[in-house]
Length: 254
Image (cartoon, rainbow, N blue to C red):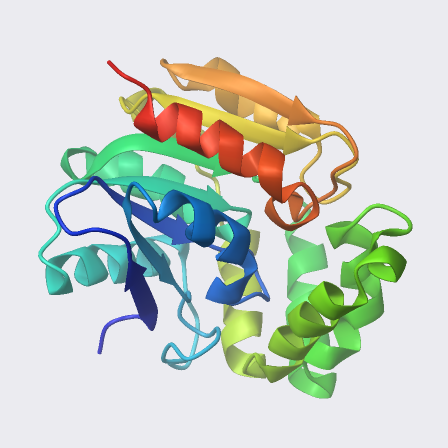
């Protein structure tokens, strides 16, 4: 069964896949889908264990999540696509671009990391979710996802994301935490041949700009953009700026 997904935009235009953050669903990309689907065939999906995608028993690793995307491409008869991923979606994107280079044209990596120790912190989060559910993470994650004051200014957006988080299957979320705990994509970065945009939130405590800098230095054709007044979910907090960066990267003339 393929990942849950939505396809919008004109047939025959370049295809773009959007992969989201841990604990979110494809609805986190709404601003980008609305804008980019005017000129691109946009496919937005839920990772396994998230949203309406299957949540098989763990353990998972990043390769499992990446192969889910390969299967989705095959299901949609898409031989080669652009790919943008934030956080967990970016981790999947790095694996995909290195291990299935023929499937990825241009790549964008947002608010992510190739290696994110300590593993014990991820295993503790997995244990918490299995014991108390994903809703138990709400207060902690809101402080990582957004800068101070954003939630008060945008209560409807935050409420939707919190609802999606609380609805995430505990086992799926926990198994994705375990995948991050075991992840080390640093050896793969020099193998990425796709022109790559790396985006960091200047105020991101989860994957701070130094993580983006390390990726940029290791990927042969990478450039870095750091967004002020943005924490981890930069695509939500700074939607217009992120959309503009993605449009420039994926639609510029070559």
